[in-house]
Image (cartoon, rainbow, N blue to C red; front, side, top):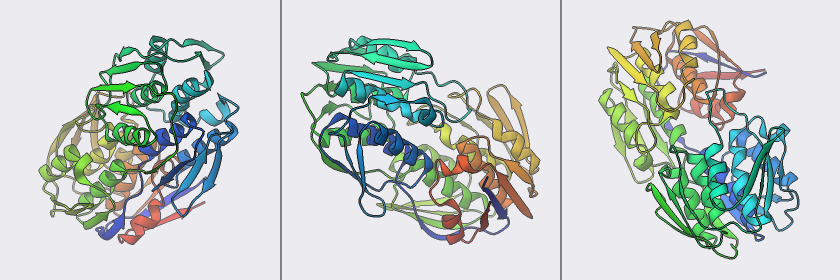
Length: 417
C-alpha cells in the first residue's frame, strides 16, 4: 500500500495548475446515461473515483473513448444493463448518482447502497423520497435500491436537508420527466450549477441552478454535447492552505476564487495576502498565521471539505480557534493523527478547540478519509523532520498527482510502496 513521505520545513513557492473538479465530474459522467448521443468532456481529473465511475458506466453498456490527456467521449446508445453492483459501488458514495438518470432513461434501476469515506451517515433517503414523488416505485432489498417507473412525472420536491448529490440525482431524473419539477431547498453548490450547465447544453430546460429553488421542465430526449469540467475548488483551497501554513507564496492557475469566498475570507483573516485574477489566485503568507475560528455549513458558507485543512493551519497559528462541524457527525478523525505530530486539539462533541503551537514534529500518521489526508499533508509540510502518511489511497481519490504538484512548489515529498 502506498505511503507519502514528507520532509517538512520548506515554504511552498511557485506556480501550479489546478485540476478539474472531482465533485463536478462524477455527476456529469452520470449525465451521459440520459442520452443515446455522445457526450464529450474535457478537463477531467485523473483520480481513482473517476476511474471507478467509468468502470461502472462501461459495465452498463456505455462506450468510453479517451480524447486527449484530460478528455473523453461517453456514448450510451448501447446502454443495456441498468445495474450498479456492490463491488463497484462500495468504494464510492457518488455511484448513487446513476439512480436518477437510469430510471429516467431506462424506466428501471438497481443500485447498491454506497460506501465511500467513513465520515458518518450520508443517507440516500432524500434521493428515494424525490423519485417516489415523481411516481417511481422504489424498494430497498438485499442492500440494493430498486426503482421502476414507465415515465417519471414532474413534481414539487422539498428535501428535508440540503443535499448536493440528492439535488443532482433528482435534477437528472427530472430532465426527462413528463411536466415540471420544482426542487425546493436545493443545494446551491457550484458543482450543481456545472451539472445544470452541462444538461442545458444537452437540451434540458433548467432554471434556478445556484439558488435554493430549481425548476426543470422535462423534455422528450436529450442530445449529445461538449462540456468542460469546472476547476476543483477544494483542491484550490487545499493548496492555498498548504502555502499559508508553510509561510509560502504561490500562484494557482486554471482556477477561480469565485467559488471560494468563505475560504479566501478566512485565509485573509489569518493574515494572508490573497490576490484574485480572472483564472488564477495568488497567496502570500505572513511570518505566522493568526488562528481563525469557523463553522461549516452548506454552500455558500464554509465548506465541510475544507475543515480538516484549516485544522492543520490552526495547529501552527498564533492563538486559539474553535472549529464547529455541522454537516457530518464523524469528521474529526484527523484530530488524533494531527496530535501525533504535536498539535494541541481538544474535541468537545461537534466542536474542536485548536491551540496553536510553535512547531510540529514529524511522525508516522494514518489517513482516515480524503480531506483528513490533505490535513496530514499540510501538517507534514510544516513539521520538523520526516512525516510518513500511510493509507494514501484516500488521497488519490481526490487529488491528482499530489506529490508532483507539491514538488513543483518546492516541497520535499516522495511516494513509497
